[in-house]
Length: 340
View 1 (cartoon, rainbow, N blue to C red):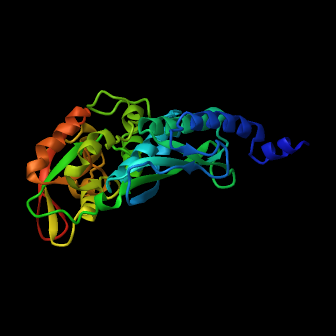
View 2 (cartoon, rainbow, N blue to C red):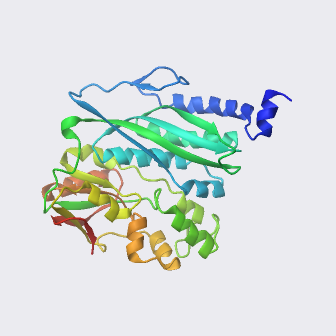
View 3 (spheres, rainbow, N blue to C red):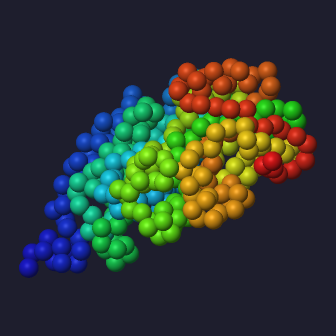
């Protein structure tokens, strides 16, 4: 038995892994910007800091896409969750006013085809190109003893940069400021454990079934790409006092992280249009409104805190980027986040 045959018998296909590496290298090379240094395939990725910063601060974040990958596996559609991962990460550092510079991905697989691996990384590369960001490298690990055959997990790390004096920490927020909510593209990358239970188990649907009342297939709805707010907000970052990326924990669990002591957020739940998928999940799953707001983004993927005088300019930037926005509340005295 050859070395390759021994590994294949143990669940690791070395030949397929080499083929995947070649396709991944092509995807990585397509993202290189003028700041990229070193060579593709090296042990570490290299990126230069852009010029024009007096006191540059690196902003870093690591995240995954959770059980959304189970929907991708069930649908046999793997070219979107990589883009989800990048956009989610860009939003996380955008909260601090950072410009994305570099990205690294981590893919753990078991019995996954070369085409699937390539599609996953191609999605990551597409997200990087959309943000002029270099995919500096990553890791693809075959772990048949840890994952079920055909399953995988996907995570990534982003590196951005911000001028130290312009970083957003929430300390500029004042009572009387306006809360601007930005439309999400759907569930984004949170709440999929509950959503899968409601749609697949309680309603008995599959990815090719239609979501009741929406006229869209379950797979299409659940695999909508997590929206990036970079182009909506970057042009007006100087007018923004704080940002909150609405991910796990919903609006109450995330907006409060961006408010200083003495400031609370009052959200008016009727001030924006909640997408139909959330109504379906609430009704079919018999989920309380309180739990819905704790688990899902409820149609708001990002919330900006701005001075009242800057609201129109901030919302115009969103319109210019093709993203709907609403005034969804205000900053009041106190603590916490209230949805009224």
